[in-house]
Length: 240
Image 1: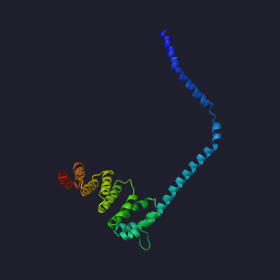
Image 2: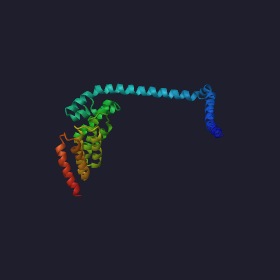
Image 3: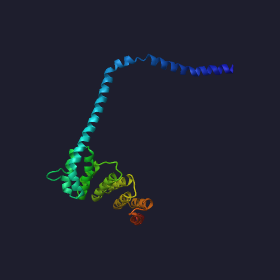
Image 4: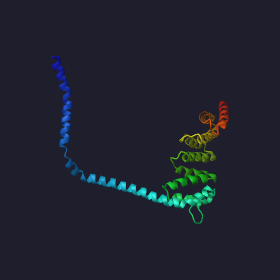
């Protein structure tokens, strides 16, 4: 009797599962594929057309940007020459024959050449003391390069430091020091970060920034200065 009850219980538990499987099979077999496509033919056709147009547009845009970048590379060479030789006005505005970086950045917006031009414009404007304009152009620049992107963040920090926007300077020095850390440039950015914290009267955070150099970058040129700066910042923090 016990075995019969167990078998009956098993049959009861299996019944819904079997019924569900049969129902599913029946639903699949009864699904009218031709009818579905016939009924939704217009929607499917429009969807395919949209996908095709988007794909074509994307390919066309990439081709356009690529061709524009080729043109930009040809035009930017004289401006880059002036920039590298510290002739900043000619680099920015061009000479009587060739365009400057500013015009190239606007004319070829969206290209890799214009992107790099934004960095160079920002750097040049910073050296000329036009800090707000420098920030504007440097913020337009973006790169996955290990060194240049961090450098751009640090330059934005420098411009804000000159403007006495210490909170903003701190934000961008932190970005610079956190971006793909390395033993050559990260200590430099941490020193700048520590200085910005000190100017903002946050000596505890300044000591922590200097401490990172002392703890993690013992081979850096900034190592000894960082240790001295850390001791000074800790002393000032204790006086608060």
